[in-house]
Image (cartoon, rainbow, N blue to C red):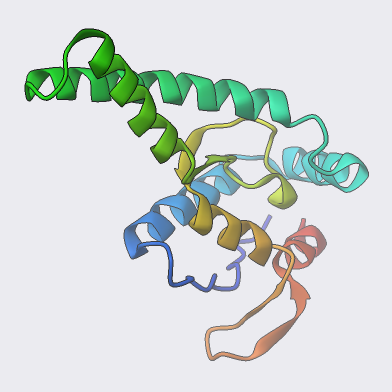
Length: 159
């Protein structure tokens, strides 16, 4: 398949530039690591069933990440002498829950863009939702003109 430049994604005001860059790099790497057949097969599956059945993989990834956060916070709180024992664990669980509320499971690339139903990371929810919603929208070219087709429609046609 020939090299294809995907229309630029617009950053929203909530996420940081660094988080946008990180998540978009993951999307780009995920697409570049797939064969054309994998892309087409995954797009066909997505068009048939959408995101049905993705909850188990996301829940597992979130639980694993939450456990790591709890461990991290509990050690940090104890090291700083702020909390100990059960109190440290409870505070760590609270901090982890608060952080988890701001995170989404990341698929690289998003399933709408041919990605597998594999959660590879977690990231800022506002950034993830912004990127995910833009796959189906018509982007703009390098000079700012609106494109006639969405990002995935263009990729589908070229595949």
